[in-house]
Length: 520
Image (cartoon, rainbow, N blue to C red; front, top):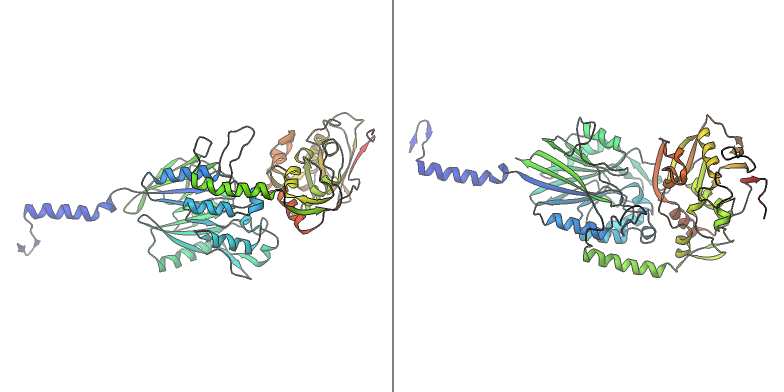
């Protein structure tokens, strides 16, 4: 019946109308959930790590099982990566990311930002990985002056009922300093915030978008700045530096495990596949009502995923075979024998320290003798030889160190001499005279850096590896240095690249002088 005031419904029709209305709005009123799984700083750890003080951790086959288990919960799941899948293990140095991308395809990754080390083998190689990947590589604020980049400014992915815009940002903190020297000549970096806002506007003009997720490869401080300023972004997933537990929201100073009605959320999981980050976002009427974050350890208690494990097995077998392949040539015998490398100057120690200093462009380079495990004979050098000489994956570091601290470092280097201690340092960029007739702590007689006497109050740039920089072999004074950059590349990778382009030569030049001379 129609009246002047409107439509009057009978009780029966009122019930039918209510049921129909609730059915129509039900999905929007009910709480929805989006689960975001994220990995960070993979760095070639396709196979599990086995650190001396930990059980086996990480590995793509176990990560795949964890992702599959979470998908089986029934919620929409988005899987993404914050970049740097390349470089860090011998496996990665040899296969250059191919097995990693194959496994990521199986795991259903939806996107990845191209990190600085993903350019380490050049743009052409990254293009090959892009063709292999069944997910987009993202670089919203990188531009190329030459050939087109093998990554795109953004992507739109459908996850369940969610239409998600993905962007990928490289920070000013690692461009151009941490990029491949040749590659960076053809690249430029746009202002991250400007690039983000322009790309979001363009995306929303072309597509209906439910959420914008920003994958970043930059320092945490830069991510926190974007958390405050990047309007239109729902989630920031960070990389490049060490992760943390929990999540940040705009205006917060410390991470929390969960937060009600967040504006924007920032998370970053732990590196090398040690954990898989999980962010659960609950929504009502497509507005976030709750965000909850956790980092799930990937340990040996998780069974391997049979499909991913079969992929890795193929590459394991190839790697075992190719370890006998020639990768270069040594023009002279390079002495890495334990008694020699841990008590005095050797030509192999000089070569490796010089390569480290040239690569990082530092004043000084320090290589502990314990890192060098074998000599190289003159002639053909195989991949297996290189792995025997430099078996460790410790990444290269740049530190800013005072002359006073550097003097302390050099004293510590010879504190157990003439014992064959791994703390004995091979050097580049300086000449040191040690007087072994003096007591421990007073054995450094003279230090000359680039033609000048060491100055205690001057700051020097020092290249070394993470083992020493974090206090290994008793170098605790280095662990207290705050000005540091992690280049996330092991010395072995630098050595391999050198072998592949030149015949190795090295001599003794007197950079380490020991008096009185040890008896032969």
